[in-house]
Image (tube, rainbow, N blue to C red; front, side):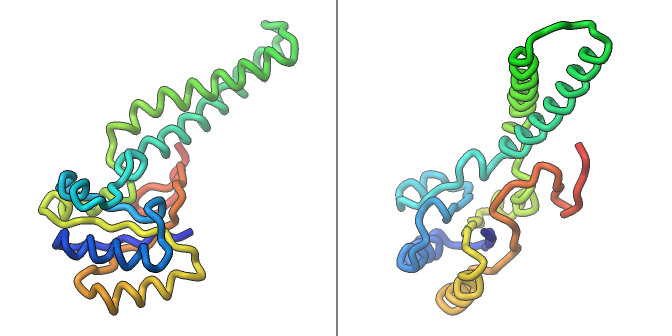
Length: 179
């Protein structure tokens, strides 16, 4: 899946885009709008961006799970090799799962307060009253969607394209960073 990012100036245009996307079979689950005017989105029954679209909660949680799993592996291997802790196999698995979950949970607290890395570059535009329209399309439908938007909504400018899935190791500069 690919996510297309469009900036739009008017809420009427966003509503028209929503109608066209619905007519093309794009459901609310694959179409999100990020706007400072949340009341306008609600009034017009437009699908507002979720907390996962707004914040880095998912990406930080994934990073925390990776870090927790690595820490758990280091702890368990050290404990097994030194014989410092003697536990049945099921206890080692439970300990690994607990430490992985704890890492994810703790990191999630950091992610909930951070703007999503993919929309950070649109922050000023959104604060200045523009609306960010995010459309998730299959690769085979991508060109048709771009043509539809260009012909029916010339005021919606394609700003960026990205994967619809989070990558816990990629920063907004597009480079992979290891924790």
